[in-house]
Length: 171
Image (cartoon, rainbow, N blue to C red; front, side, top):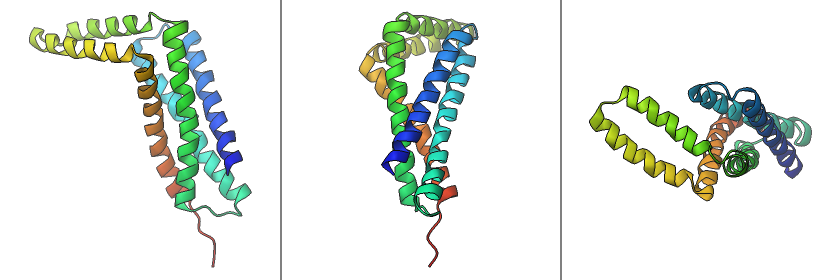
């Protein structure tokens, strides 16, 4: 089980890194909302290895059976590996490769809000945004948020995969 978790966790981590690098170099001219959607697609694609890891364990290592509990355990750990790597990659990107990203990102959000919100609501939202910006400027909090986001999506994929792939031993 350990070998499967490490192997498919590594596949997920490598996939998310490759897609991140590809989007950074190839898709940086797209608008931020489009980049955000593509980021979630990248997360989803990298977490597809949860399904393949559980299936591999069931079919190749465990005689064609896997309990819901085993599948859940395998899927969560594969997701955790992917989540940790993505959190570290995000911090490396915002702290080393592109330290001005947060300022650019929030400036873009402010411009969009100015075009769509009435002045009273704009003031409230800008205050909230400044608070968020301060939190995301902290690398530890940024890591926790990004890793947790990936882990939560991974949990959903894990639950679905465990339901689909569970197969009890025949009596």
